[in-house]
Image (cartoon, rainbow over all chains, first blue to last red; front, side, top):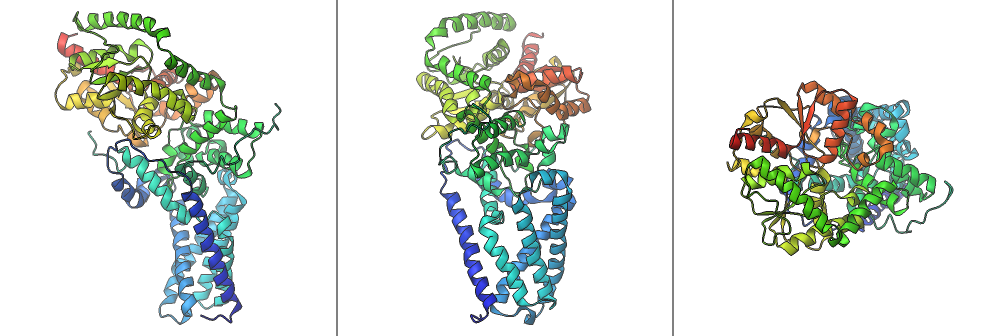
Length: 211
Length: 410
């Protein structure tokens, strides 16, 4: 930890803003009322919630993933790239990741994550349907996370400095509270609601077929 | 009012939304993976028909607090005529965003702002006023039931067969739809099942739910709940109506403190139970033609009745087949969410029903069994529009045919 390094200080401030922003948004979400559901469930929703996070997310279980295998793969790679960058960022706060044995092993995930991000930006511009859905935030968020993956990639391969990586991370973190990126937290709420809704009704996981 | 007229929407409208709605509002990342899940998009691949697009219109209004007549009118049109609340898109969303829930909330906002289709609001209000004073129609209702009872006696050949109404101490309060088709087959079924039942004064359908107005929806349900409590029944059995089942079984208990003191089942569940217990005499030869079952969204995806109809039909027909996809993956027929009651949306409704028409055609079946009245009207119309050459029947009437064949040989 080097408090004399300005980019480090900016990163710490950005971390506070970004994580604080997510916490505020989650708190706002939890501020909404959630009426109790007294209807007797057909099946325990617990099973369904577990299913929603596990088997239900497998590509062959979702029609959308079955129809768009490349988009699904692109999404997986992009998110792996982002999570790898986060791990690397955390490590870089304490030790220069370049000095870590094996940090270069992150590079394939980061490289593929960057390509996935780049492809996602291009598709968002080229695809008629996505153009109709896009908000400016979709581009800003996507470009920023793609840049953080790229800078992490450059960092582990010693092409760019840690300061560049931190700079990109700071940009993402500062923008985070106003972006769609908190879906990383909302995801869990949405999956719970999804699991409870279809689980109580006994729709998911599907009951044993009678025919 | 001009299109720019601002409609007064409470300042804290967004803050007061329930948590599940707030989650659905915030979570979408506009990846577009829900696109092909929608029957509207499948039959007409326009960006307007992408589920996420519809939800985005609602989100934009809330985000920008754009409560102009023009914007709310456009939102209302989308929420009521471009979505049947089938929730197929929810199943395909990688994040599980409940766009159906958002569209229902958008409908509620449209009602509150006076931009919802008047006919649907009127239908809800008519049902409420009927519940306020049943004495006005009581005699007429009882006379009609007497006439139906006569038909039941003829069909069963039993002069003792009855359609009990207002019977205290009955186990079951059966809530039908208006129309003989919704009352006679269940009456015959209950007769042979030796059930201790009574018919409700009120019909099951709930336009309050369809317009996304919880207050009206609750008042419509209240009539039935009060009747069930007054008669002291053990359970309410809902006739062949998708949204009524979903409402009474799953949604309405949330509107009453502590839920209901009775059980709620669909007549399909009752039949499946009776069949599994071997309590119904059935002769499959009464239904010899190839039969398929249409999974009504409110019964299947939103109601949880995935296997029960199949248990029933397998026992009552000779040649049961499946459409593909089916069960919770099934396509909406295009007639849900109240769209069927608005004549100016008929052509849109026919277009949206194309995937279902194609599904039916692909099976080669001659009979489509439908356990939801709105779906039944829609599939009848699709039959005519797409020249499918099929017969459409209800699930209870199919079972009753098999019962009568087994009992009477005809």
